[in-house]
Length: 458
Ligand SMILES: [Zn+2]
Image (tube, rainbow, N blue to C red; front, top):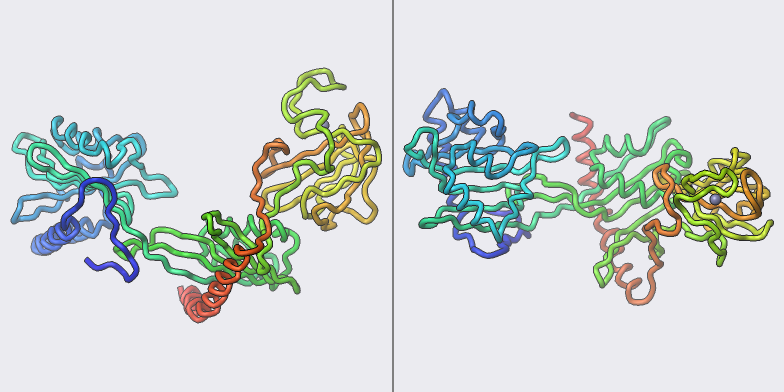
């Protein structure tokens, strides 16, 4: 078996495998021949051999005859997938592995594989698969387990193999091969960024990151004009068998929208921390201010409290800051005003949407800053209104709220992805990395065009 260039075979933990893969390959080859010689079963055999068909543990009893046999060694091979509620012991029992062998296999995994982490199939992810290599056990329904493989992914497997009286286990991992890909899309009239990005084959995870990071500077619902163009550069990971495993890092994103051109670059610092920056090395992820008014004292914290006017216990959805009437209120972050006006007990209320995830709100205001209206964009620190005591309020103070995905969170404790601007040596490292990414981005243009043409053909 050969691995793509740049792929290292890495063996971790304890026992070293000696030619295990080669051994498997050999058996597979023999199985293939056997399968083809038996006409009626050949297609099932070949599928099972290729690993494309996995027998559900629930269907196991019905499909046991689908196992493949090596005529020279008498070793059968069967593959089972793991479903919710399955345990390794129960699966082995169902397969006919005798009690003492089950115990010995489980004991052998002690330091190499935590059997409680056996992963079932879910809607989103294929679970672990068990590959049993066994001989007929002689006794009715029982088998003799020669080797068990827990196939987690094409880069991670766990083995337990018969050695003398017991079993010996090891883990095998491979570094995935990484391929950098470029994709881009143009947003048409009435289309959403997410829909267009999905149509271009960009993975959810990459779309999410793009949306969250650029969302600090861009309102994806309202800022985007027809004809806006975006590009992304990200990694795809492949296993030693050449199969796609998943996406890797999101390296670069660009958004061109009616004259503005936003770029973000992933940068790994010398200490291993990863963050996104614009082309100048300024942090692309900006935190909201926990205390919009500098130095203001907290007069009432977030959480359950006895309401000063209503008298009963009620959850306080924000934090109150003591401040005299008329104190200017700066926006906690850049964003767009989505509400401005009277709102029940809140009195004069203003709400700013910062990105796809965060909003902040300010209540009991005496008034709003002139020129700030629903739809206005504001910068972090820009004045949006003035402290007052309108609505259900006992005296002048600022009631401040942060909403994360529409849910009130404690402004004083919420963790936000804030990133400092780069300087000094780190800025030099960033610029060097940025140049590489720019070159790679340009080089991948042809590649991407071919991909887009193939998409059209499908
Ligand atoms: Zn309050």
